Length: 236
Image 1 (cartoon, rainbow, N blue to C red):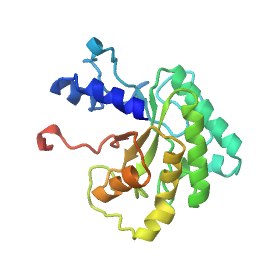
Image 2 (image 1 turned 30 degrees about the vertical axis):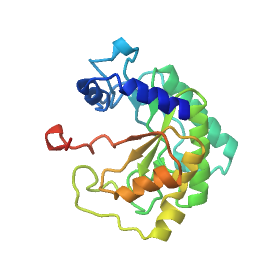
Image 3 (image 1 turned 90 degrees about the vertical axis):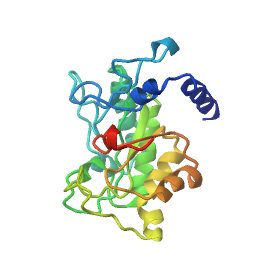
């Protein structure tokens, strides 16, 4: 990571403010790439042509000639590290083949709400099993040359009133947070995951500091697709 961070800092130091805003703002959906950065204003003078992200827990979506892979909960039910990693590698290969740079997965939330609409994406309610499955998926995907983005950090346990409606709060005590909800993310960091996606709802800065300082995560943070506030409300 040290050499990558040094190169990134040298690159950012050469950017204009407009280029920085463009490269950190994702646009587009329902296509081969979703949340693309640098679109329409690539920094070609520095050899950078933008980043293609793709969101699907079971492979590339919004594209032709792609596969629908088994859901995360089914993969975890095999209790087979090698098979789970092979699944990740197969998904990574298809992402890479479609020109995707960042695969927005795996999803590793903990099924706190039994009726949550996205429980099938994750690996179940056991933190150890979920952690192992997450790590193996990351290793498989990134072994094929794409960046995995583990999500959603942290406490994203329901879809109801999730996006754009700050009407609920995830209140989790310290022990439960570390032994249950954070465990799979710690495993992802240990496996070398390149990116982490944050939740829609508000989280305390301390939780991000845990990720960076306690787990030594040095990769990229990304917001969930509808989380960022309009530029006019953002502070400089």
